[in-house]
Image (cartoon, rainbow, N blue to C red):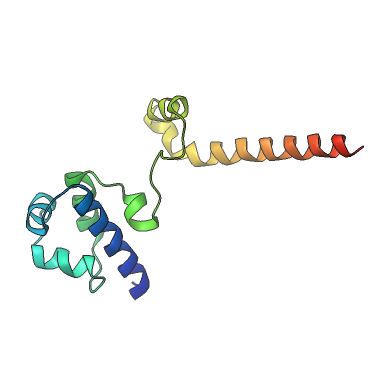
Length: 120
């Protein structure tokens, strides 16, 4: 894994740990990893396996989207939109991003048409 990516992931992980007011030892114990390994991840010196990522996300309640990409899940959604997404049946969850993109395209096209009619 590229060093800059590991560093960004490490910074996000540390930020989340500090937000939870946890020491490295407390966080590592809850995540089922050693404090030394956690320090190496936080400092961007080591990457982690998918298994370790899963343990951290599940046991410490951190979004993998946030750790990997810096995306905070649902922070940009209204309460009603969050409710819709959270209540989607499991088989449809994989289509959520596609559906949102389709809606975005429709809205963008509509706005474009509206602007064009204003110019006439």
